[in-house]
Amino acid sequence: MSQITARVPDELVEALDAAAENLKRSRADIIRHALERYLEDYDDLDVALERLRDPADPVLDWDEVRQELLSSD
Image (cartoon, rainbow, N blue to C red; front, side, top):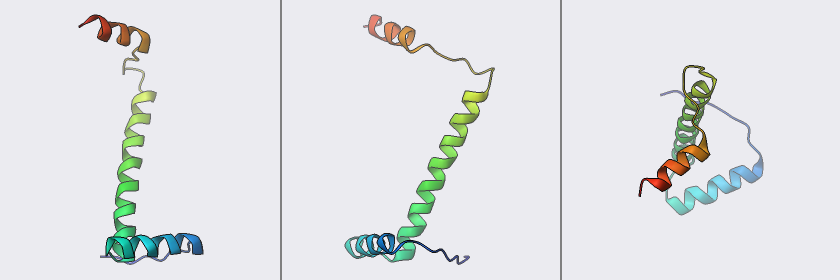
């Protein structure tokens, strides 16, 4: 496992320490979990942007989809 160092504002460290105390976890655990979640979200966003840029991926008209859903009942 690698170790990294980052400079963060004091307010962020205070919030991190408060969360660590409340969750009974270490700073490292909270930072690791936060990075994992951030990177998962980043990957999801990257996939979404790729799909938006793909001219072969059909674009659906919201009004048409909504109308179809409402009339299917």
